[in-house]
Length: 313
Image 1 (cartoon, rainbow, N blue to C red):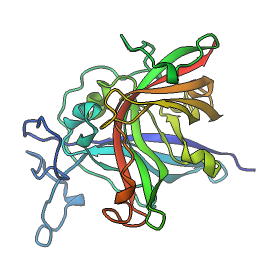
Image 2 (cartoon, helix red, strand yellow; image 1 turned 60 degrees about the horizontal axis):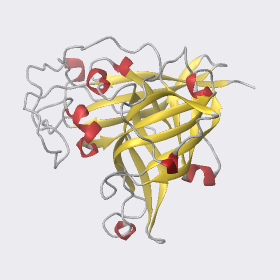
Image 3 (cartoon, helix red, strand yellow; image 1 turned 90 degrees about the vertical axis):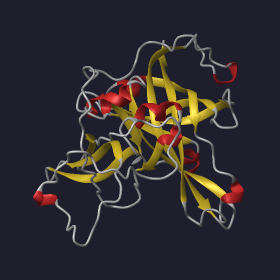
């Protein structure tokens, strides 16, 4: 039997806006200013007698390619990533996910590339391993989502900007979990650096996992981006939740149990995950399924959060 493995080629396409960053989140999709000083190579030029520039987006993403060992080839799997109107908005998206203006569409077999301009100076060297080993200063874990520290210990944390998809079933008037699209960095401040250097992306959402339907409803997966040194993946199934400090606008804090782990590396050792410091991530109202949004529409619930990972003692 041919052994199929997956790796991720982490790709970043970045753009520059000379407009001062707005304090409030955007109210429409795209930056309508053409990048100052950008000259488009003739090989990719658009016929401007029939077309005109409309808007730009900035994306941090990872594109998956699957290995076929028999043929010795790589096949396109699909991208995982989030988009903002201006590259400088990634820092704001950590605190306010409404700065996320688009997400990768993974249910079509099409590759879309955004060609932009990046002139942001590199701030520091990229990480050489997965995760931040410092526990968040001053954080008190609510008892409802606590991990048994007699059997487990904190290992590392990640910061995520993502959107969780919920699909509308207009007949039933319900939303069903589809899965997250997003990228992870070791520290929330690293999102700004990831615009110029995608090596700051340390993990991505795992969208190619096949599990039973009852597991998918309450689960999500994560894949290390430190290939080939770390090929680990893990599925995390929600066990407990507790309201966020601001529950009217922010999704729950939660504890998830790790399972279905593959590869070698840090995620294969993880026992539990806690999601804290959630911003956004609310499920859309049931009343909007079939009215505001049509049947089968996938609603992107934008969010940011810090994830804490535990291993056995």
